[in-house]
Length: 97
Image (cartoon, rainbow, N blue to C red; front, side):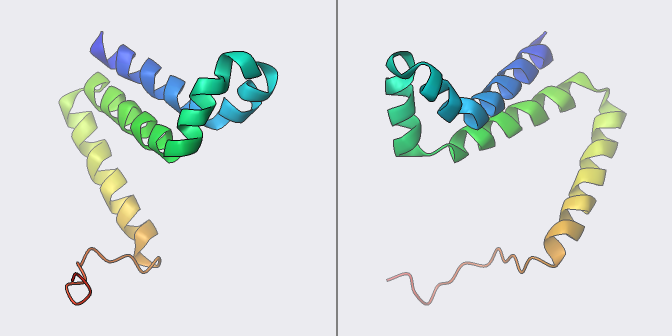
């Protein structure tokens, strides 16, 4: 039951992040406080939390061996995708102070 809840929350957050401007245009009185919070914080937090909720829901729904295989496939695919993007995880210690 938890995996279904995570899937529903993830889908809701992603849809809300994607459609918050049209919803505000349709119902400005109802969505004014929500629109201001999203405008201040940014919609990226909804995309990130929605994606994490979907990932948790999918991995908890699948059997262990399938989720492990999917995790490895996604890790390798993500590595190949980020290989040409010039992504670095090193911390620049020269400009800290």
